[in-house]
Image (cartoon, rainbow, N blue to C red; front, side, top):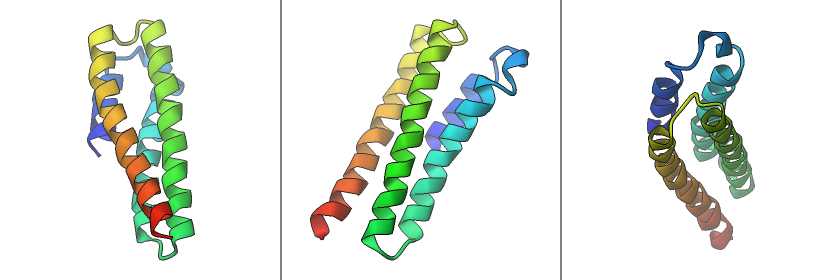
Length: 106
């Protein structure tokens, strides 16, 4: 959830003409991460849980690419990128932990 908040805060200062471009893409990717984790946690079968956690990881990869694009287009600076990347890496480790814990149990 904190990653979603950070992405929304970060994209507030993007150029207005990007509202339906990268701003929308980044916000959707961040929301998708949280939504897929929530849905995965609600599933009963291990296979379904892992499937949703893997989808969340895919959305996290999308967000990673979008952050790099934002940096290259100077929509964000290096310091802002580092802050979000730190959160990104924590979320990535948590997702991998969720995936691994489900796979190891079975």
